[in-house]
Amino acid sequence: MTIAEKEIKKFETSNCDQDKVFYQAMEEVIYSIGPLLESDEKYTRYAILERLVVPDRIIKFKVVWLDDNQNIMVNTGYRVQFNNALGPYKGGLRFHPTVNEGILKFLGFEQILKNALTGLPIGGGKGGSDFNPKGKSDFEVMKFCSAFMTELHKYIGPRMDIPAGDIGVGSREIGYLFGEYKKITSTYEGVLTGKPYMFGGSFMRPEATGYGVVYFTETMLEIENQESLEGKICTVSGAGNVALHVIEKLLEIGAIPVTCSDSTGTIYDARGVDLALLKELKLEKRLSLEGYKLSHPEAEFMPAYEYLEDRHAVWDIPCYAAFPCATQNELSEMDAQNLISNGCVSVSEGANMPSTPDAIAAFLSHKICFAPAKAANAGGVAVSEFEMSQNASMTKWSFEKVDEKLKETMQQICTRVALTAKDYGVEGNYVDGSNIAGFKRVADAMIAEGI
Ligand code: NDP
Ligand code: 2IT
Image 1 (cartoon, rainbow, N blue to C red):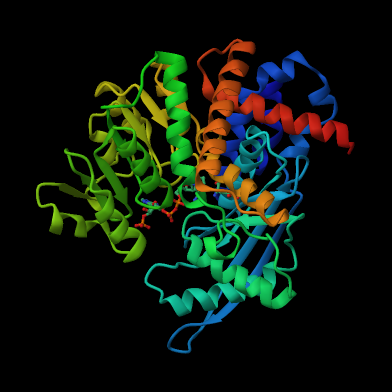
Image 2 (image 1 turned 90 degrees about the vertical axis):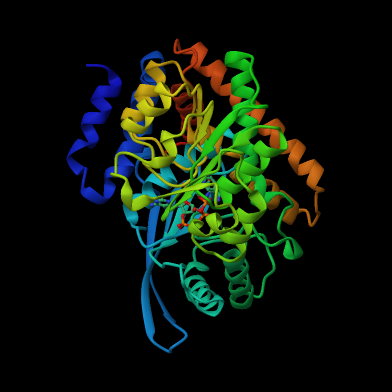
């Protein structure tokens, strides 16, 4: 039995339903780092895996707020402070009805290794609530955010834990959370990232994740295929912060993004999607994608309910490069097979863990260039760290400076991942390369810091 197999066995018994996604994330990492564990016994001797897969603490709290009809509403809030070996806990907040401890543990665990890959001094954490912002008025969102921060403020701080956005949390929510933190603590500090520009937000934080995914993909395609995305058909899923900024950057570099999707369905516009309309529908008016067809009757709208759980319309469309940017496990093995048989050569994960393990196995066995989330979408948290630096030094960097540093960071991550994969005998496997490079950085810090 290999060391990796022995390690997996240790965690098998506690695999409860909520924790399924967490075990999915953990299992991938343990199998990937097998060659590292075999090459140096210190990681086993210092029980790094046993220590890494248990969060430092999970904070769970009640959030009580009043809706616009004066009904008393109750939600659950969480913050998973996972690991701070490399720096203060850092990671987003997700507001979505599906949020539970297992989902936040998976996201927090991924965040530790992602943050390590950036090379920046940030640890890993994640938080959120089962609050559903959909259909809520601005005032309701504000009241929920205030109530959430009334509890959360006790556990965060600019050198302790710095939350940011994720699904359902953008600059509006971060603004309200920041306002409440300031009121409670009478301090004006960089305790959250993704703030609006007028009070401490960094230029380019909204764009960073999506732009970063495209910078990473360009570097990967250059290394692996000496190709570029210019003129290539691309499919994108999601229609939120990450997806729309992937689309924006693809359009800017001359690629042709032809799809996007939301929880109601998929838009396929063969001439390239209309980004201005998408921003108006999804970011300004917060409506469903169905409305796209009113302005573009020639586009197709494929409703989500017409598709089985293991097949998604967006991955039926032939493309050169695919960008899953909605949510976890949105790309199944069947979707992967469809993409491969339609000639797709590159898949880059904008969302966290959007591809199932079987889908990833199919991509790797067909030698598809596959950029895993923890490497490809690290641009968001990297620019969050740039925001922390700007706040700490009371300065503001230009858009151009942030963009240049983001590009450099994504190129460095990609190169490091590719070289690590080569060093450990799995050339071209960016999954193993990312997991080994990220794990090694955190593990070496944990060993140096003692138990
Ligand atoms: P948003 O809330 O801005 O957008 C999420 C998008 O995904 C929406 O279009 C939403 O549809 C769709 N979506 C969500 N859940 C589902 C579902 N179950 N089925 C189908 N569609 C769904 O979130 P982000 O763009 O910020 O986040 C998207 C992904 O990227 C997540 O995995 C997140 O963890 C990851 N990520 C985000 C970063 C960031 O900086 N924001 C950084 C790195 C990763 P609808 O509008 O109908 O709800
Ligand atoms: O998954 C992620 O990297 C994020 N949601 C962003 C985290 C951050 O702290 O900017």
